[in-house]
Image (cartoon, rainbow, N blue to C red; front, top):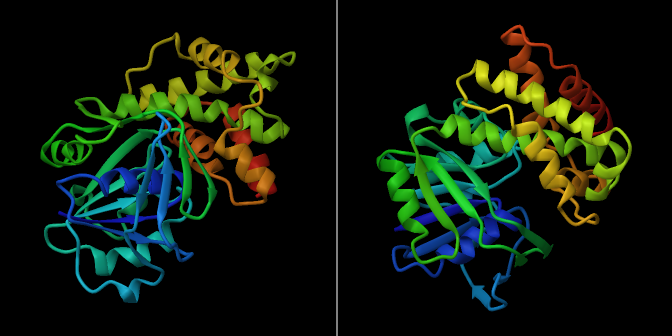
Length: 291
């Protein structure tokens, strides 16, 4: 099995390192902007994976299609990612999209038929300290739709600590994660880490954002319970007060932000279904102006 990972950041690099150890994988290629000498990943138990996959920095360096393409770029980087797909994708290639949001398939429809795309919900806490240097903090999970492609993708992770599984209701899984992510905009808006949830009124604001997400998610077929707003805030309240989510980290570093995949999508789909989403709409508007 030959596979390529587009975007070897914290998530892509962690996944690539684990897959490089799999007996099912013969070759891993990293498609990166910056050359890497190797991948060094500190795993949750303190051990270190050191891998030396093939690294390419230009699509012209790809000489043959692979069996699997794993897209681990930011959700807004569709055009940059799309440039890699033509040389990597052959008649039998499957493409897994490991990105935030609920529009995995729609983003890449300009480049691939929908039946070639496998959407992935991934929760693998990891931090990159430098190109190719990553700390994988907790084992994590991967969830994909049930089916032949999903089963094949899950099998790739059989020898890793990442728990991969299929689901018959991927829509609900994706929207549940979006409920968590949409509330995280509060951190980027305030410029403050996780402890901001304890400030007056912030918990109520986050609940309101999640309620909007729940209403829109239900309109598109997700089975979301009324408990979600409280669940999201309780998770935030029990997280370390100095925790920094990726949206805040990107804003503090002056990098582009995934505001559309986290909040803009709720406002857009809400409008399409006649559902008011003033809080997520405001968050998307302010973050887009700051982007």
